[in-house]
Amino acid sequence: MHILFLTDNFPPEVNAPASRTYEHCIEWVKEGCEVTVVTCFPNFPNGKVFSGYKNKLWDIENMNGIRVIRVWTFITPNKGFLKRIIDYQSFMVSAVIASVFVKKPDVVIGTSPQFFTACAAYIVSFFKRKPFIFELRDIWPESIKVVGAMKDSFILNLLEKVEMHLYKKADLIVSVTNSFKRVLMGRGVDGNKIRVVLNGADLSNYKPMQKDEEISSRYGLEGRFVAGYVGTHGMAHALETILEAASKSENRDIRFLMVGDGAQKDHLKEIAAMRNLDNVVFIDTVPKSDIARYYSLLDASIIHLKKTDLFRTVIPSKLFECMAMGIPVIFGVEGESAEIVISEDVGLTFEPENPDDLSRQINRLKDNEILRKELRNKCVHASKKYRRDANASEMLGHILEVAGKG
Image 1 (tube, one colour):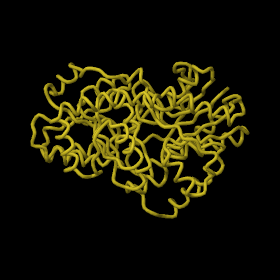
Image 2 (cartoon, rainbow, N blue to C red):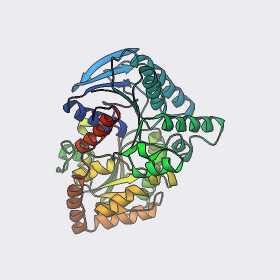
Image 3 (spheres, rainbow, N blue to C red):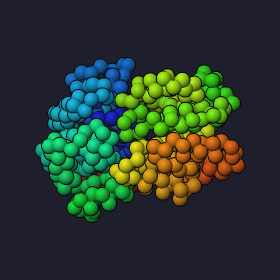
């Protein structure tokens, strides 16, 4: 079984699409599959090529049994919609060309969040006459509209038509949430070809651990209650809400930790500087191998997205990482993901973009050690339901079925 997987995010990038793809591919290799990944040179989220790499026409490396083909793209900082579209389209073209030289795949998979990658996978599958699988991580381009990156226009309408064409042409759609499946079925997509494979966490990498003393000392966090956000600092995350909560906080024993990079990072740092928020600590993106050490600093993990109906359909993958590490979440996302938090009893919820509500929940958790202990225990227990290896095996079963090799 040879799986050809197209994705524009892959390690050493550390965002959710990169982690899911890599961890799934590792499990498929263990199951005896041959896996080829076509991706770009690592540059997310700052649009700068990582140290040790060069943006050239073609490069091949082996990552734990995965054949990784990296191709040239128009790399640009994650600022400005037009430049990002050119970036996405350049990967689509380069990925199609590179895939021509991949011999005898049995299936071709393209993953969102942006669907130009899925476009490339569909084109490759058409010419190679192999099944096309669309892994749906985001309802795109709708998501770029709701965050304010683009308004209704001819271009947006055209992109939505391409999106629907891809859904209809896919032999299989693997959705990361049940809500996405309902949305697609409501738009006329055949539900019989949609399978839901939730996100999860690699329990061998994410597990309970003591606070990292070296990092805690480096940033002056000893003896503090640390509420933190770990992840991309983008428009969708509305992280100004966290800074507003920090500005309202009167408890000097609370520190707000912001780990990661993204299009809004500089803006957020400017806000913090203007307001003299000495209780906020910013840390740039850290290597994937060190993420658990930074998670360990948190007494509570803040997970937040803008208040919009579309984000009621998403499940941030960092939820499962926090659960695996036994970190209670303070959760500012409505919909399906909030239902998981409530049903598994792994944290407290607050209204998105409501800093007062966020502050109340932080103080509630800080002042109640018994509650924190209960939530930590329930996090670890619930995380066993959301194991990445189990997710990967489930998805492989669907892939084999579509490829006629089940």
